[in-house]
Length: 136
Image 1 (cartoon, helix red, strand yellow):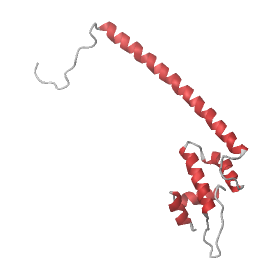
Image 2: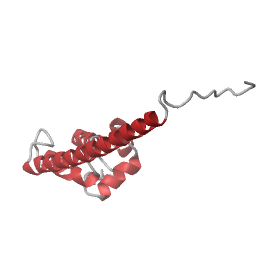
Image 3: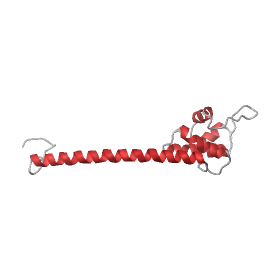
Image 4: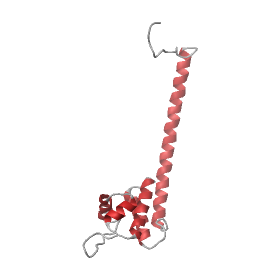
């Protein structure tokens, strides 16, 4: 298939495919007429790249998965290098989750302090405000 059809079927642009080709992620095969030529295996490579990018992997992190598919494995995560990337990504995610949990705890503590101070100043809390205005 030609580049336009591959782009359409993969849900991407021809520009993206040329970029992947320049990065060595997509093979640069040419037909006799000089047009780029792709097959179903190339579509699988693109689907693997897109899935991983949807999960937050950067383009270079997809390389071991692409290499694994190119080596003839049925899945891009069947190789040791792919598994290592998964492990690193899980470590990154765990660190981000811990950081977010810490920030959440700090925000919760600030809220509790602010609510306590507000209720200490006024026994019934702050007086109601009339947003509509007008004569009272």
